[in-house]
Image (cartoon, rainbow, N blue to C red; front, top):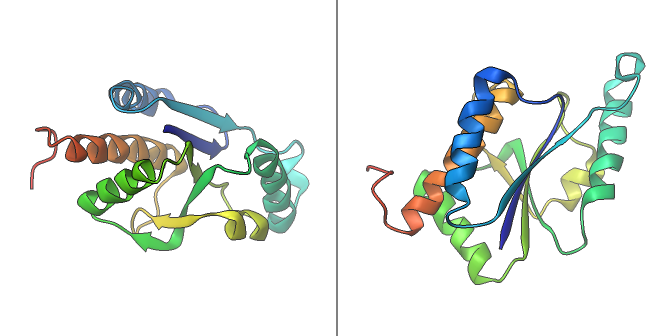
Length: 157
């Protein structure tokens, strides 16, 4: 199983890049992992929210493969404890999913097509975080879930 983390927007700020690289390297002990930063549409400043979501959605759909398991990070999604996330990831591995894509949408969310295409919607928290921090939290939580599944010392209950 391969894990991909996709995000709409600009490259990582230096204050989060080091942490993302650290956790990504740790995740690679369990699964191949890759980050993809999808640039926002050109002329975004002149677009409405719905136009922006539509253009971003077209970019995402162009990158997704038919059998990709898409997990959309969305405030309306299901919340997990770290142990539940670990179990969820292990279930995807047990089901022989080839590619899991965690998607952090754009500033205004995602298009209806992406929302409907998502195999699962996951909410990190009822709090709102800057996209840069969501990237770091996502990387850390995936690593934590992997360490829980291997019964390693990183996670303390």
